[in-house]
Image 1: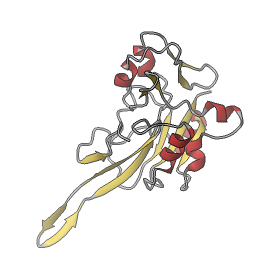
Image 2: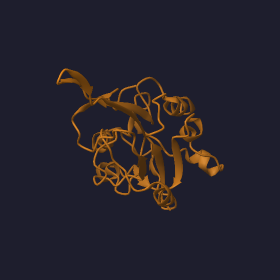
Image 3: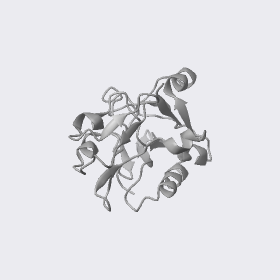
Image 4: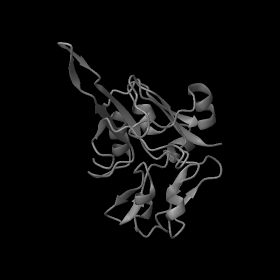
Length: 205
């Protein structure tokens, strides 16, 4: 089995409750976030034959570690400190092996590995494995007021919701094959779209 996330971007309002819930549970300091919510927006107003028309768009994406099928972080770690669980596919960091070189931070296209400055080691979303062991869902999923997040067997999530795993501003899913399913929002833009801008930047608090 491979665990993964479903994000209904058509429901997400950008409230960041999922981000705050994750941050609070993991006691993360300012600047370190295991889950982040970003806005992608763009377009403009144009005068056409004396009338104003617009193609403005804006939507939100909630993103964390996608526990990828081909994790870039594992490939670059010089100390084998990152591994993928055989039973559920969660990608985990062993802080005892980690040397804080931050190679995984540079390699991950989603910005998932986060540097803990107090211990000088890398950290990230572990799928709330302690909560899973107790039969609960990840804290971000339970916290979402719009029920825009789901977590479970990614194969089942794909059967229910489709196989879309990338939209702007996210990277091409072929890079790491993320365990992620997306429901597109209205006026969704394809991967590689340059008409919009991202706020905040993916690694900002």
